[in-house]
Length: 120
Image 1 (tube, one colour):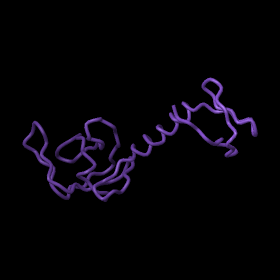
Image 2 (cartoon, one colour):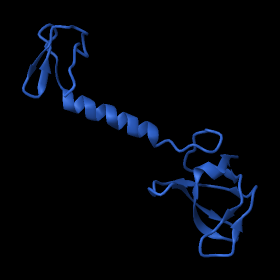
Image 3 (cartoon, one colour):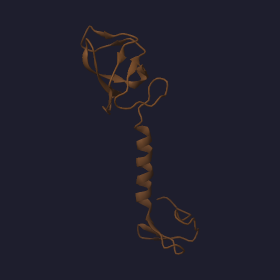
């Protein structure tokens, strides 16, 4: 359990714990330590959801990117060549590192890793 030493509202040191709540007698502010820890971890997760290209630029849905490395496609003899421009990407969280869903002319729907593209 985290030991809080100051009230988040008035920054007073005179706080006490009552069950799951912390209470500040000076400003009457009450807060749940576990809820604030969860909010902090959600904020960290939200920051991690930003998908960045090979140069560190944040990508968004609908952006255009350029492939910076020749990519072999599993189960096929096709390759995505260097310099291929991909328009209208969709960001997704596949869990396997493939965080860009897109369609490439001549190949079709494919998922790419953001480390192999740069924003166009």
